[in-house]
Amino acid sequence: MLIKAKNISKHFHKKCLYENVSVTINSGEKIAIVGENGSGKTTLLKILYGIEPVDNGYINSSIDTKIGYLSQLDINQCISVKEIFKNNFSYMQEIEEKLRKLEKSMENAFGNNMENLLEQYQKYLDMFEAYGGYELEKTYKEFISIFEIDKFINMKYSELSGGQKQYIRLCLILFGEYNLIFLDEPTSFLDSRKTLWLKNYVQKSSKAFLIVSHDVGFISQLCTKYFDIDNFRIDVYYGSYDTYIRSKHAHLTKQAQKNTTASNKIALLSDSICKQRKWMTTAEDKHKHKVLIDRLKRDLKKETEKIVHRQKTAFNFPITGQGDRSSSENKNVLIQLNNISVVLGEKLILSKISLTVCSGMHLIIYGENGVGKTTLLNIISQRIEPYSGTLYVDKKASLMYAEQGFIDDNITCADYFSSVTGLSKYQCKEHIDELFGLEADYGNMNLRLLSGGEKKRLQIGACVIRNPDIILLDEPTISLDEHSVSILFDMLKDYKGTIIVASHDTRFKEIEGFAVKSIDSHGNLI
Image (tube, rainbow, N blue to C red; front, side):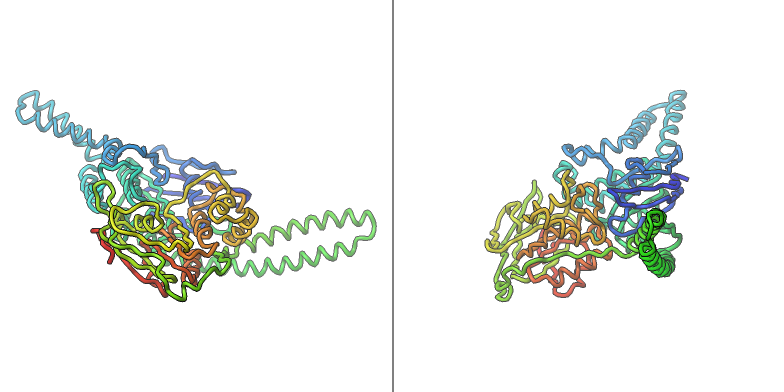
């Protein structure tokens, strides 16, 4: 046993995440945490890691448990990638250096001196093997090659793209001295080749992994245990992903039956409350009946809450106003790139790219990590200037850009929404209610309290609410659950304006009306 959580409860901003739940993580287990956006998946990681308190219950961990948490790495932004690796893997480097020095010394040694050197050599060799040195070295070199670290080894961490930063964090976690690794959306920003490498590594590793991911293809091939967060509970399922889904379906069927029972109970309780009110005649009666009515009301509230929280969270990406769509009918050119090239440092990112985007066009841009997808969106949004070539963007066209990242700031959701859209806070709160469905009072919540998926919904909602002529979306499906992705795709399909998406998500190819472009490893648009 590595970690055991017993009878824990957690409320977050007046919202109950789970009540009196218990989970256990054992050595070598591959576990997925599943649930809708905002259900408390990342919060559970933080609780088990020890940085988020529980309302009640306790967490026990083995004395030998060493946890590495992908999202909690503290990396110096001002030093180079080479220095980061040197600082974090010094223990292995020191052992290897000792071995090399001893090998050199033994070349001319003899007698007692040789015996002493051999004894020291065996000592460090045992340490090297204990750390899994041979296999670690091989896998480490493989990682460096697959993730092409050599291309940005001398760059500062602050200069890296989102994907490149993810590589560094993964490397530090995977090859660190941990026996339990927490991964929160590990495939975010990773192209298919790198995702496959990560899957194979986790699969072969003897370490335990606790994974939060909406990438079903990833977790279904790795995990044999599932922590399913739903309706204040954490249900534990064992077996394959298909087995989990079947068991979950059976559980939901039982819940539906409970809903019917609860609905009948609500009807009876409501009827009882009405009857009690009618029967009140004297002051004594009023007191007796008031006590009974209060109890019935509490029961009614409890049963109603059960049904509400069993319902699937519904939300919409609201679109208000029609805007001027005459240009869409004429298919006039909104964006024109002619021989655009971009150089960052000494590296050519984009090479003589030409692209014409007409009004109403929907475009998805694919490509491996680091080829320049985000850079292209930054060029179009005029956040960066090209090294060469010309750019035309229709000045009359309104443009909104939902970036890849999301700044955790100490402001409320309504403040953020208002700053992006220009709408009043009252209007923003109404739209935020639509974005988050049944959950109340999200407008007054701080951004840092939202889950990754909730932040992404808020960000995209703020982007589309004013119905702009041009929408730029960088990895919009990151952290979104399947239900949210489905709603997003429906919105994009029906959107009348121009949309340009940069993503690794191949599901965009399935959306009717999307043209497909790719940027190759040489920075060419094909």
